[in-house]
Image 1 (cartoon, rainbow, N blue to C red):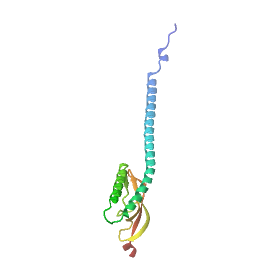
Image 2: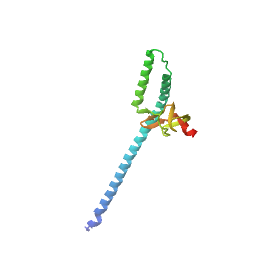
Image 3: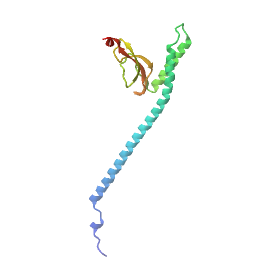
Image 4: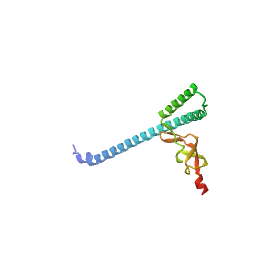
Length: 163
């Protein structure tokens, strides 16, 4: 029987170790890519849910704004229990907004901020330039992101205009 050269048959151990490291490295990269894709997909799904929720909430905010406006025109004649009921409804709506981390944009008395305010006009005033002096429509943030900018009237300082 002919003699077999064991070195010719046995693969080079160093070569096999290098292949194993290469395959392990490739698997680790694929695992990291998968983890990153999963995180990215989860983030996109969460964002999609937030934006779709924001659309529904914007519709509800329109009703809330009209409700608040109606409350500013309530008569001041006597004690009326139905007005207390309306005030209670307003408080419940505010609790609903807080539950979804929705907050109203601060307006009157604040410096104009184009990131959260939309100037729809200006009026002469003794206030410093570009200070919000009236709110035309409330603005809202959801988790710190603007979903509806506040429409505001800003000041034009009359002392500056006359000089």
